[in-house]
Length: 143
Image (cartoon, rainbow, N blue to C red; front, side, top):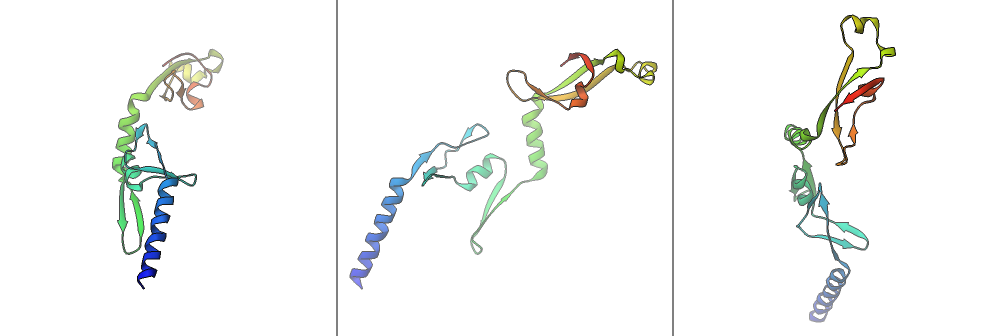
């Protein structure tokens, strides 16, 4: 019995030593923020703590011991307000004039020669994403 126990302990020691030898630390970033909670590469796969990723994106992570299950939960109201807070500085107004050939008689009668809409700055070089109808048939666009 004693020899069997020693053999099992030796086998486990070798297994843990091999796993540790093949586990490399990994740098993982979520929305530009580096996780500091132990990410590893094992056999070509990156393993990260689920709780660390969840909390970084504003979710909660809970563990159910009896079912051996992890749950990630978002508070939708909080998630939406976080998104608005993070992106509102990137929202821009877009104003322009319709090209004369696309002005309707009704638009002319109400002096509605201006078009307006919104867009979002998606790159720091000034690239803006907007719907096509905001800039379609428009000239003299001001952002």
